[in-house]
Length: 217
Image (cartoon, rainbow, N blue to C red; front, side, top):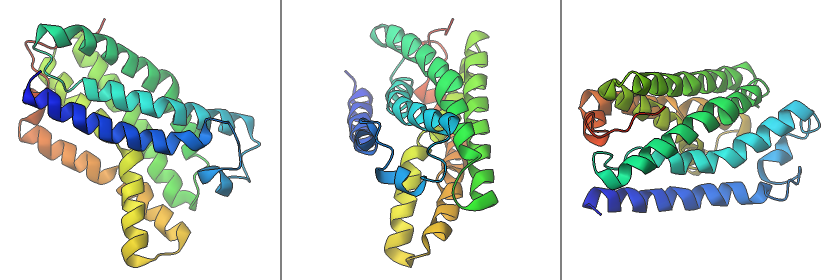
């Protein structure tokens, strides 16, 4: 295993532990735990409740599957993993987690400001992933790598949102709803801006080798 694969594995393990900690309270399907305590006004809405649990339980998988796309795909031993995980990432995100996130965004706390932020996030998340799939199908490997960087930057918003919330509360002590409106945007906009900067620096080409990336059929 190369040094880059080791580094990616360690980062993956760290983020996976964080996602497991976020997900564990919901394993029992209890509707009065953690985040759901402030969603009691909507929790009995069947569509919203199903969307929430689908979104939560697929997020950990998407994190793991997404990370595998940045292993050195040019090496033969990674090609099969890259192809299989990529297919599952697309299916799970476009078929389940993305639409579920869109439903949740329509009822986000914080009013129209938060709802707009999360709606844009869910739409961009699905769009960038669809573009990553489309470019892979057409064997446009450089573009595929760039779209995957964008897609995964938005996937990581599940973690960066919580990091921003922690920092805002620690240093500024805002009203809870004010903090939620801020992190609704901070959770993903900086991620996407950073992704664009990395793409312009040529990182996508180095992470996803055009010659080695397996086609997603």
